[in-house]
Structure formats: C-alpha cells, structure tokens
Amino acid sequence: MFTSVLTLVETDRVLIRAQIVEGLKEGDVVDRRRALARASRHWHLLQLHEEILDRARRPFPGEPVRTLDAVHFASALVARAAVPELAVLSLDTSIRNTSGDLGFEVFPADQPAK
Image 1 (cartoon, one colour):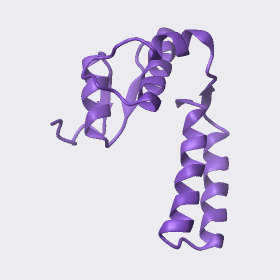
Image 2 (image 1 turned 90 degrees about the vertical axis):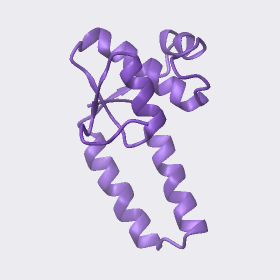
Image 3 (image 1 turned 180 degrees about the horizontal axis):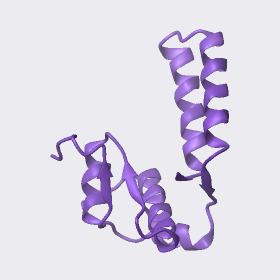
C-alpha cells in the first residue's frame, strides 16, 4: 500500500470535522485514530518531495482536478515508477476516472465510472 503523507492529514481532518459537526464521540475518534495508526504502520508513505510537487503543478486528464487530488495523483505516478502494477483504490468517481485515464487499474472493479 502506497499513499501520500497527506492521507493521514486528511483522515485526521475528517475525524475532527465528524466530532465537531456530526457529534462523533471522543472515544470513537480515539478508536479510529488508533485503527489508522495500526493500519498505516504497514503503508509506504510518500513524502512531498520536489518530483511529486512538480508533477502536481501540471495538468491531469479530466481537469479541473482539486489540489490535494493532484498531489495524490502525482504521488501515485511516482510510486508506479517503482511498482508498475500499482493500482488505485477509490470510490470517488472523479478520482476513478482520472486514475483510469492515467493508466491505473482502479478498484473496487464493480464500481461504475461516470
């Protein structure tokens, strides 16, 4: 599993929002952070180095692409250079479509593209 370090930031932000806006209980937030910490110990976290940031600044198929998504796409492209069979896991339609346009296999396979 490869992902940008931004995934951890985004996940923490979602938990903060869920606690404040949706009333997620503190205990549930703690449990979810622990589960994320356990899972992410097995991930390859891609740092935001110059190659990734430079690629994120250039166009992608399906523009407009959101800034954080561009960083994730750039990270995936860098990771694919090391692991050619790398695939993308997403339920987001725009992420799925752009990933497919970039030549990635996209999972779950049973999700329709739009």
